[in-house]
Length: 83
Image 1 (cartoon, rainbow, N blue to C red):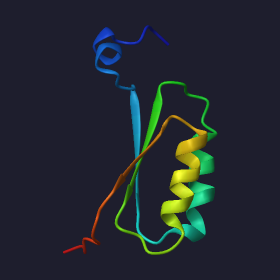
Image 2: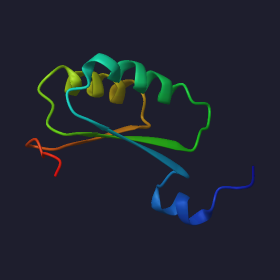
Image 3: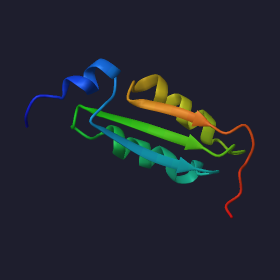
Image 4: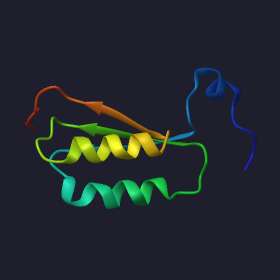
């Protein structure tokens, strides 16, 4: 693969960002993040958007974010319903 575009480096962006929306997904979240973090593509970030979960989701996300710098978190302060 060729060189990374200079604009991405200058802005601190990655070539690929994977978005993972979640609401009360503790049952499967650890496995999903484990799979994403096992990717060998280096220029990757993982953006987890938590819709104000009330289960163990925030703790699981925080644990992964501490272990892997590619994991970034956005948490809604209140649950936003679809529709």
